Image 1 (cartoon, rainbow, N blue to C red):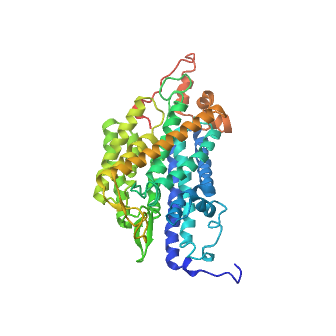
Image 2: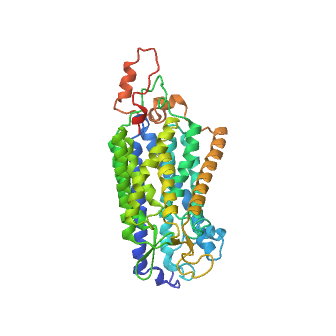
Image 3: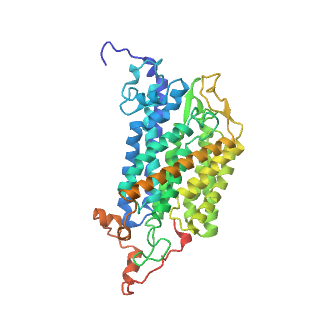
Amino acid sequence: MTPETAIFADQVTLNSLVQNIVYASGTVGAIFVVVGLLLIDAGMVRRQNLFSTTIEKVVGFFIGFATYFVIGFALWAAQYYIMEGFTMRDSIADWWMGGGMVNVYAQDVDPDVFPLLNNFQIFVFFLACFAGIINVLLHYAVSERMKASAYYITCVVATLVSSYLSFLTWGSVGPLTNPGFHDFFGVGFVYVFPAAMGIVFAWKLGARPGYFAPHPRVAGYYPPSIGLAAAGVMTIFAGIPMVILSCLFFFDPEALAVSVTMADASIGVAFNNYGLSWAGGALTGAVIAYATRKYVYLLLGPLAGYLSGASGFDVWMPWQTFLVALGAPLAAYVVYEFTYKRMIDEHKLIPLFLGAGIYGLIMVGIFKSGTPRSGYLGFDEGEFAFQHAEISLTMQLAGIGTVLALGVVTALVLSFILDKTIGMRVDEDMQVAGLDARFWDIKTDVQTLAEIEEGAAGGAAGAPRAAPLAPDTRG
């Protein structure tokens, strides 16, 4: 800073510092979510693919993170520029990676030009983490069978499309949020979108060798550590409360909390909603698991409960969240069993996000219809007046349809292009032998039960062997 440069003290007050810390904590929570997702997958994939699947998720995360810095945030922030009479082009000029508002100290910018600049700058990091998380989730649908190069290209495209979806569906003054589409936690663009892409990719890539049908060289899929996956679930549980704080705006007097949707909210109610969503899902998931003897619902249950409540943590009351969450594992159960019987090899994104996630969005539209939201605090009239619109089932369905359509179309276009160029699917021989050994020359020092059985069957002239785990016990 030169001596002639003015310091705009209103940009760096103690109050703004507290808000900055609150929003910065959301980035920490998001990173905990990434760790949890890595742990879940590490506990569920074949041991022969452990390094490859983990490192691909890490690289995919940072591809999404960097791409979001390049232009993704500028797309999301455009809704607030349009609210002020500017354009998306103006937002891009300010907020792409080389933009003027990204590369300047907050104290050097007049609040009349851009107030609370620190908060917006921190939001770039926060939302970039979720751009990366979307790619990590998408990898669940293609794990162990999609070429790394094809996946990395997909990560760039998915980040761009999901960023535009966030402009449409997450906030309070976007094209769908301003008329009333309500999604407190970004269930649509963070969860439903990659699941919609995952349906297409699972169909195009087909099932992994030996997963559904007998295969001469794969005795079965044996999760190396279900306990590790459970630890991953609880790591996510620990990280998301900090993220919830970052989905609230704080206004005078002192720390009046209003959700990102501009609905009335409070920190305590939002946190209690969060906790009870997990509890409700965990309880029903446990009932299903013990009744069917399928362990997977012990893991899916709490996650399903969380997804069912996430879109309405700001507007639900705790007892309502608990009741909604109790029903969420049933939605996941119906979708899981439907896809498994049809041998669709994707059992995380589709039952959780398309089952429980969409169920939760619809429940908000039915039971919180009429709740005021939208617009922006300080606007008393006009199309962006504070809380001028209400939650409605019609807008919820419109938002769900938009997210699903963009996810499916994006995956179809990508599949066509990738098939015609570099190809999508890892060849079967590499899938059978394991990606780690074939690509990285990494060999595990643990002999799995599958390998022992394969060795014992060596004299059987390569006779096909059915997977020894019954279909209804796999994760």
